[in-house]
Image (cartoon, rainbow, N blue to C red; front, side, top):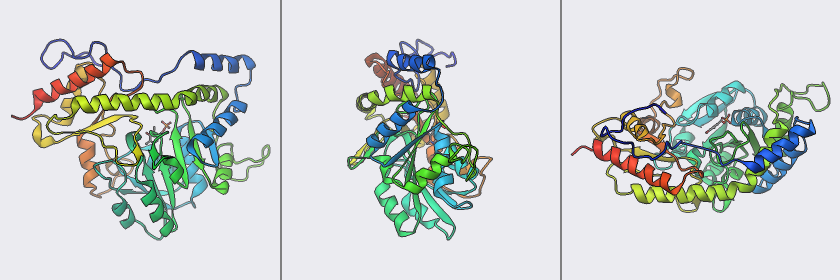
Length: 382
Ligand SMILES: *Cc1c(COP(=O)(O)O)cnc(C)c1O
């Protein structure tokens, strides 16, 4: 974090710098990785198979296939589940990989707007964009909250499309008691260090569809079923055994980490409620938010400065507030279109995220609340 004076020129509100994310990782992971290293077998093997079996059962799907990143999980899913050259309807307000992986798989991303309450793809807007070439609609469970996968699955089935769920930020999110990714024809997860659980780099494809699972397994290993016979165009998207070992330790702690995120989020919610023009995250009935990030939004009318200035000031207080994502995908140089997607554009200008990760102490949480309250009070229009 950059060194800056706090807003009043005095001491920062945070007693120690508070990062936006930090994995809970330690002795157990170290021990399991040590075993792998000393075994001499570093390539994908029995630990990866065990991690897949345990994740399939946790998510409630027939097939779980580990890969080397969340981006790879999207690429493999798009290559395996759709005909080349399909249009893929994705929300504009998401991480770039949701759309760029579709482009790499030979499809055309078509951007739809989002809802401002949950930041998920807007169903009506997505439905309007379905054409004869559409192959899939993508639901992104942003910030750790399950979107309305049931309604989207129904729409997809009605129109003969696949529902792809990008749950990179939301492993363990629930919708009506079921894991949120399990509602997709295919779901993608990331195990990057900032996500709900980590393997360092890593990812997962989950599906009930035998044919999709088979193609994902081919695609992630150069399209070969047997040695050096290549049936489909593939890549090396395999996960190593050290990563799988870390994943096994993390998965056994996942529920406890999610519960800690939820307690932290409740503390932030209580501490930050009542601040004028600060819109807190929602958790609709029937959904379990995993609070991968505690993302708020400001009403720009009520503040004297813009969101970027507010985030800068909170960071100067020692709290690593960040913006996910400042530029919607339809405005990115790689995808540029003249489309207007007002909710995506507003969210990109007004959201910022605060730490809610399970490594936060009670003091940290108090400091996050003090820092945010102090900065917003200083910049509120009066
Ligand atoms: C993190 C993330 C990805 C990509 O995952 P990596 O493991 O970083 O490749 C894709 N989509 C979303 C929504 C993400 O948050």
